[in-house]
Amino acid sequence: MRSNIQGIKQNEEFFIYDYQNEFDLIQYENLFIKNGIADKSQDRLNWQHLNNPCNSTFISFAIEQLTKKYAALYTVFPVHFKYFKTTLQAAQSIDTITDYNYRGKGLFILLAKHLYNKASEKGVEFVYGFPNKNSVTGFLQKLNWIEIADVPFLIKPLRPKYFLNLIPILKNFTSIFPNISLFFKIKTRTLKDYQIKSITSFDQSVDEVWKKFAERINIAVDRNQSYLNWRITQKPKEGYITYGLYTNEQKLCAIISYSIKNKHTGKIGYIMDYYFDYNHEKAADNLLKKVIDEMNSKKVDAILTWCFKHSPNYSHYIKSRFYYLPKKLRPIELHFGALDLSKKNNAISKKENWYISYLDSDTV
Image 1 (cartoon, helix red, strand yellow):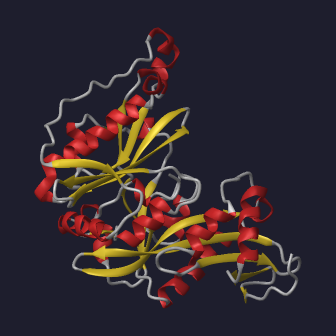
Image 2: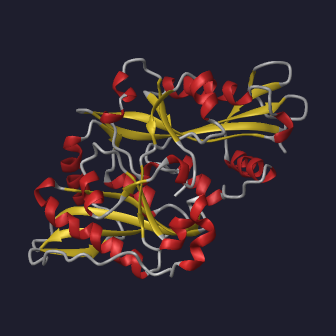
Image 3: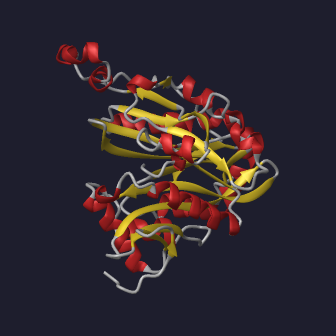
């Protein structure tokens, strides 16, 4: 532990200290491990906070003055946003934790207010995120976030036992049902003018597809090639699979990415994102159906995705028999909210302006 840490004094007990070097990332990881969470590896922290597309780092710690022990932290990471006809910088709220020895002292609120001031000074216009049930009250009541909407979970059940286990009244009867696939392969149009190919890195062609798709979107993370390469291909210890739909002239016109994880007592498929050039929308359906069929062949129990009803791709999910997942059956309670740091982006309060997908999640 370094003894010469200097920071901004908050009271007689704690001061606030902003990230300086990689030693602090070790303390970041250790704080989580000490409090029973072991998923903050150095590789992931470097990827998220030091190597993000905006090349900015926003990590603040509360440190006990007497012992120099790291008592709490709060972090956001910056992202470029499409905001109507412009591009601006925002930040996603990511991690907050207070060591069990220092809880009840208001450290999360102190850190968040400090970090928001710092981010605002560096051009961040708003902060958004997906607080869980343990932290949402602090964001809404003490930091003045607005709750925009429920996180829009959609589910496609593929095998009955997983889905029945979600319903308490049916849980004891799952042994009666054979755990066979519920998915019947849907016939697709012959793609005589298109080809589906794997994508392992993103180039300028994806920028064109996103630009077309985003014409009907007001607010969303700018899913350009830089962001996608960072989020999909460079994230440590992930196995995302991405396909592109191409014309026979090799023009990219739709993309889809997914992952499969053993979570929530089942084998779950996650559609990270799926979007297209509207001139090729009908053909793009085949891309979604291919991924569903592929996940079914891998014995996935259910497929999850995030999609608002007003999103341009919502009808595609519904046609492929995805269903709204009621709150009581969701594997995790998440809320979607934001705070306008600039006081000029009122449009962030209306969910109809937003496009989100699992690509915006920091846990998948």
